[in-house]
Image (cartoon, rainbow over all chains, first blue to last red; front, top):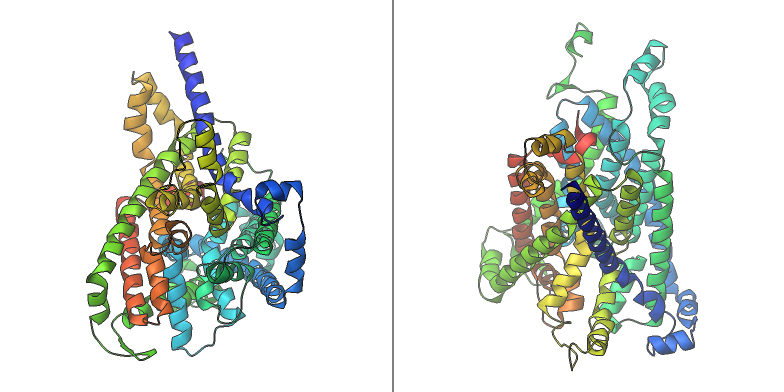
Length: 267
Length: 300
C-alpha cells in the first residue's frame, strides 16, 4: 500500500515537473526569434549560415534611436531612484497608520488598471492641466506603474524587521531620522535595492502606458512599437529587442543575487 | 500614541497627527491619488463631454456611451469579455498546478529558482515576446513545420495565426506569469498542519485538496483571476500583432478611437473597462481580507 502510494507520488511529481517545464518553454520560446532575426532578414537558415551584425551597426547611425536610448536610460534612472523612496514611505505608512488596508489598496491600485486606461487617464490629466507631454510625464506614468511592485518588495523586506530595534535606538537617544537611517535602513537595504532594480526593469519594458503620454519623446520601447506599426519589423529592430532582452535578463539576474540569502518560505 | 500627546490637542486628520513625518508618509498616497485616481475621475467626466472638431467641450451628454453600446462596438466588448475569460481560465489551469507544486512539493532552493525563471519572461516586454509568436505560429513557422514533418497535417494550418487562437495564445503567454505569484503566495501561506489533519482524519489526497487546500487558496485564485483578466481585457498590443487586420478587442479599439481624435468615446470605453475591473476588485475585497494574499508581508 505505502509502496503504491509512494509510486503514485512519484508519478505526480514527474507530471508536475513536466507541466512546469512545458509552461517555462512556452514563456522562453518567444525570446529566441529576435536574436536570430537580428542577424539578417532573409530567413533563419540564411541568418545562421552568414550571420550579419549590420542590424546592430544600423542602431548607432540613427539619431532618433540614439535619442530614444538616452530617454529610456534617463527614465529608468529617475524611476529607479524615486520609486523605492516612495515605496519605503508607503510601507512605513502601512506599519504606522491605523488604516493599513486603505494604504495597501491605494498602493496596489495601479496593478488593477489596464495599461491603456492608465495611459489614457494620465494623458487626459496632462492635457487638462495644459502640461505638454515631456520626459517628466513619461517618468510619472512609469513610476506609477512600478510603484505597486516596489511597494510589495519593500513591504516583504520590512516584515522581517523587528521594530523593537527602533525602540532601542530611541532609548539610546537617536531621533527618528537617525534611527531609520542607522538601524532600519541597513536592514531593509536589499529590499530597497531590489525594488529599485525591479522598477528600472519594468520601465525599460513599458510600452502601452508610455506611448499615450510620450508626446514627441520616444523611448526604445515606443520607438519599436511605432516603427512596427508604420513600416514593420527589420533586423535593426530585432537587434534592439535582443539588446533589451539581454539587459533585462542581466538586471533580473542581478536582482536575484541581491535578494539572495533570504529563505523563500516563511519559517 | 494618545497617551504621549501633549496638553494642547494636536491637529489631526482621521486620527493621525499632522506632522512633517506623516506628510512624508502620505507622499506616495498623494502621488497615486493625484496621478491615478484624479485622472480616472477626469476620464469619467470627459466621457460625458461633447466632441467638437478636433477637440472636446464640457457638456453632459450620453452620446459617447450611445455610440459605444450601439452597433459593432458592443460586439467588440462581448468578444473582449469572452477572450479575457478564456485567457483567465486557461492561465489558471496552467498556473495553479505549478504554484501548488512549488508551494507544497519542492525544496526552498528549487522554489526560488523556478519562481525566478517565471519572473524573467514576465519582465521582458510582452510586446517583444508577442512579435515572436507571429513568427512561431505563421504558415511557414516552426509550429506548422513541425506538425507537417510529424505527418500530423498535410498543409499548414491557417487558423494558427491572425485568429482568436493566436490572440488567446499570445495573451496567455503574456499574463500567465502574473498569475503564478499570487497563487504561490496563497498556497505557500497555508498551514501544513491543516492538510496533515485532513489526511489523519482519513481523507484521500483528492478530497483533502478539494475540501482543504483549494478553499484556503481562494484569495490567491481570485487575485490571479483579477491579474489575468485586467491584463487580457485591456490589452491593446496583442490583438494588433496576432489578430490581423480588423481584429478588434476593446483595448486596441480605444487606441484606434484615439487615433481619430474621438476623445469622449475613448473615455467612455475606458470607463467601462475600469468599472469592470474595480467591480472585480470590490468583489474580491468583499470575499477576502486584502492582506491574506500578501501572506507574511501583509500580516500585521
